[in-house]
Picture 1: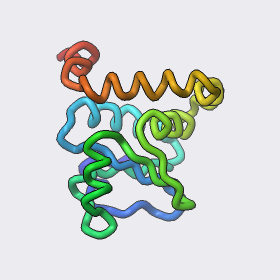
Picture 2: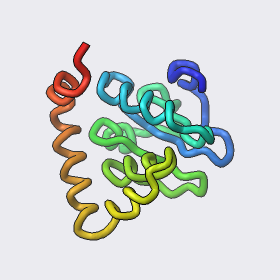
Picture 3: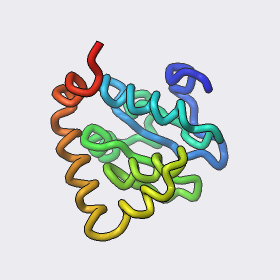
Picture 4: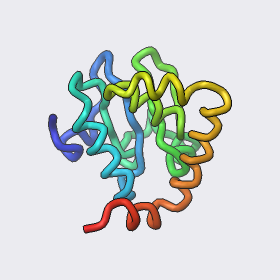
Length: 131
């Protein structure tokens, strides 16, 4: 598995999921490393949204990426926030758990949890990732 920095600036290969994340966020970087460490099939192609060329990046997508992680499927579909995280978890082997969490109303709990963490990344980073 190449380091995240080696993958920056590269478009995803065919069949890969393009994970757009905040490259300025330490919490996000640790989460991406965690996912890549479990991605045995090499399905996830992470890239900080700040390093994506224009186009395909545009003002609207950049604004959306500042608020939430985005995942582009190989077939072109896109997910964001909690649902994108669920797909990443599914890709790295947590299929049963994800199947359960995608059920209504649990998926709303995932989205609420995502937004709470996303809005308080610095606090959660200090709580979860102590030196």
